[in-house]
Image (cartoon, rainbow, N blue to C red; front, side, top):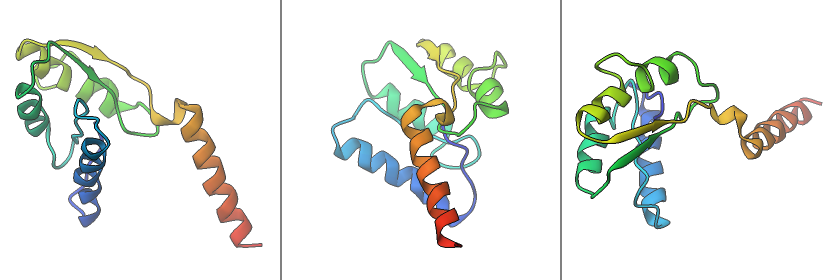
Length: 119
């Protein structure tokens, strides 16, 4: 679950889905909280498979409000509740991308490149 935006850059989510599918990762679905693809789009795609269990994970640097409430919350409109209501076992991984060592390394490299570019 990404954040999403009404800006043109939101197209990155559809592109990410294409890349995942192109690499044979057909069991991964990309959706957003604030734009498209939406929760409804992801649920529709998942329903086409024979899945019994869904793992939800935020594609955000930190697992803040959207991850804890919109994704993993107990409210009836959270991703967790919607998938459970559709009959799926749901596992929520409430960890931001910033907690992943490989992502930390990429961010550090980009920050260092930015610093080096102004020297």
